[in-house]
Image 1 (cartoon, one colour):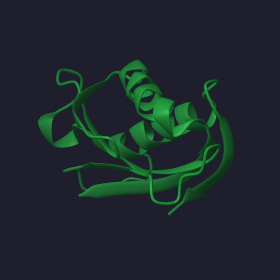
Image 2 (tube, rainbow, N blue to C red):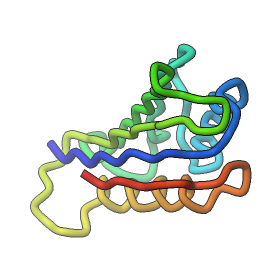
Image 3 (cartoon, rainbow, N blue to C red):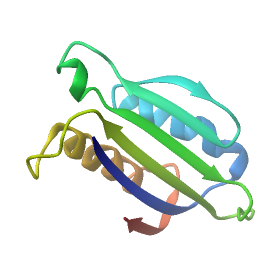
Image 4 (tube, rainbow, N blue to C red):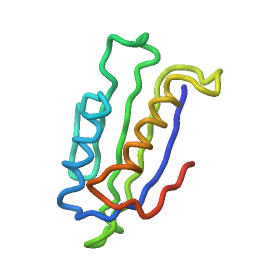
Length: 115
């Protein structure tokens, strides 16, 4: 199973963050299937890749450490594909979503941690 993770600290109001993340995921051609106030799950829309390569994205919003101006979010992007190649489908979707978060005009990126 391929799995990639990353955390970000963004400067945006916690009240607006969930809606902005849902919008960002939809702009990345992902279908948001479930969300709560601190968790969002989206999946890649079937039809472009085989079933085992379909990517799931989980976003965790850390409300416990959030301030009025900073919030930490973590993403986990995974699929059933074995990561036999460096540039596999899951890694490509991870880079695309990561770049969308880093370059989003709706917030200021303070820090990014890949891990």
